[in-house]
Length: 503
Image 1 (tube, rainbow, N blue to C red):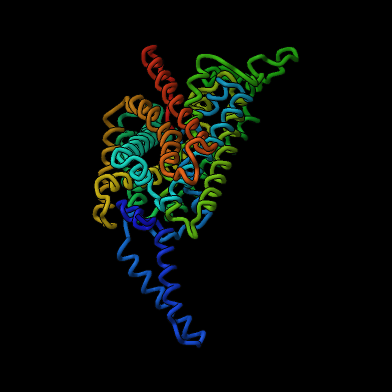
Image 2: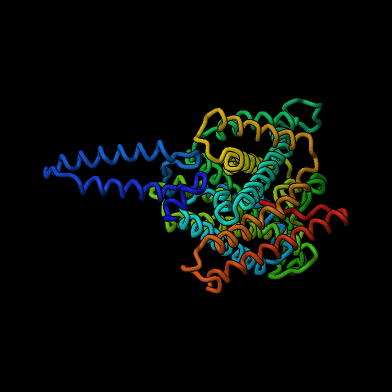
């Protein structure tokens, strides 16, 4: 069976590269048969011939996953960066407090490098078979079971992520409005009810963005979302130099006029509570490793972004991924470092809550909360795209793009997630388990095993270094899965709820 026939044997398995190659081959043969010597006529003939062939190819092979690559390099970086950047950044200072500065930096560096390698495996596999859909890579590697496993993992992981984002909107938005309006004793006002607010935000902001035909159009909102998180980072750095150590609680502040307590006030000696730890090992250290491991989850979005990248190539998409990961790596480390150096051992699992202990009406921190809420809200449509794509790949693999279906899936998904967030108060614990299983699959296990199965043995034997490394990578994924699940189960049985897994 020829390579092109083999690609066509997969439903929707024909990617841009194979389409372009066929079109180019046919155009070349058309040019060979041309007799006019006039350069202008020849050029016009080529153009018409190329247009005709392109139209014919499009009519024959267009699928809902095959968009002409129109998204610029910069917009693709914004989209992937926004997919990486989740609410997890709020917990990184707590993670640093429980690992120490040096150990945290080592872990973050290792995870960033592993994430980049994982994307390399995905791109290499998709390049070989001309497929730019995660589920279809699963189909090529393991048939229907592989396709379903990938689709289900993407759906569960991203529904979990979207639920956690909307849960933040539900819990934080009323508090922000309450603080801005200085309402100390709410009397059941509807605009302070998180359930109403989350539905309003979903209908007014998320749904219209989720109805976009292509992911590339969200580059502008992704850029704005990242600028909101940059504002969060700058504020955290600024606050480090404006909050004394040890800090004074708001309740204590109210009855005490002495606010300028510094680390050196105790007889010139530095308070031990204000000395950063370079390495710190305690029971909570183990819980923070899964948080770091999933800090760079963006793999379901990689192939859709690759599909829409202008002048797409494996090398160019790897550059997009590396730049996105590098920018997030810097933002993560700085947010964790300055958040930790502000509060040291007193830092809470959610960084912004710690600032509220000093002054719940601090205008800058209120603005930061609004910025974080905006960033989280604008991330939801990016995360929704791969879920809709996975559902279409599983339920309608051979169907062309259809607006009613495109809109209906987005509406049903958002309705389902809103109902979960409103009626399931312990949703995050449930999705902790899902995150602990689906995230290692999407980051470590699937890219590695798909690579081992898809890359031909003639090109790379099973005992070649790349395949041995891929097998080890899958093993790391299983290790993370077992470790994360163990910590969550221990957490549940011990009654404390600190095992936060997921993005």
